[in-house]
Amino acid sequence: MSRVKILMAAAVTAVTAVSVTASPASAWPAGDLTATLEEDLSFTWALGTDTCTSSALEGSITSGGAITIDTAVFGGCTGTISSIEALPVSSPSARTAWPNLFWSWNLTPTSGYNYDGLLSVTGFRVAIRLNVLGGITCVYTSPFSGYYYHGTNPKRPLSYYPYLQFRFPGVPVPKAASGSHWFCPNTVTTTGVWVVPGIV
Image (cartoon, rainbow, N blue to C red; front, side, top):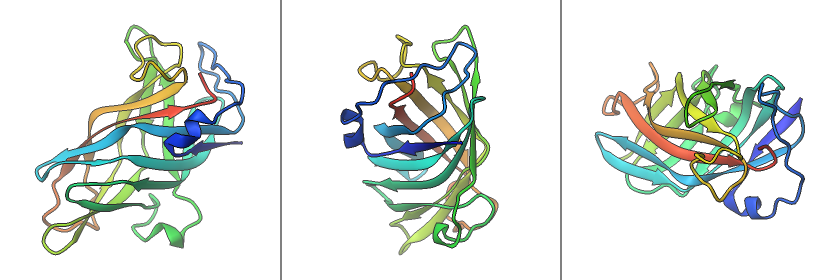
């Protein structure tokens, strides 16, 4: 099964591999991939709006569009957010205690819209640490969904990148049932765009 690597923005400009185009039926190609967060990840909630400027993920994808994210990091966070830690969906314990996160994402093609398909997130869990009340932790989880755009779609969010793009356009992400401080909002609205060089 091929590896999916979502790296920092500098890696995008260094990509020299030949891009592979998914078919209209979304038979996703196998092989090593690179990608990066190219639009700041913003979090809007009762506490205001905070942003993170970088993210890196690693995982695998099937020809049917099923994605498993094994590792994830986030950085460059400002505002009330001091850090974000990725957690495995099967346990609230720290990522270092598990070899994989087991986050499940899936790409489902659609037609008749500006986007090319739905990005369904059924496995996701992060601990957001906030600089309020002396420092608290809020845990947010799935399910939620976004959209994907092929690199040939003229309506893709970032037209200067001719690659597959994942977009979360103000998506409400729910608070987990456990692991959060009582002060944490029940949802956080998330916006961001990831670019996936190597796949069109």
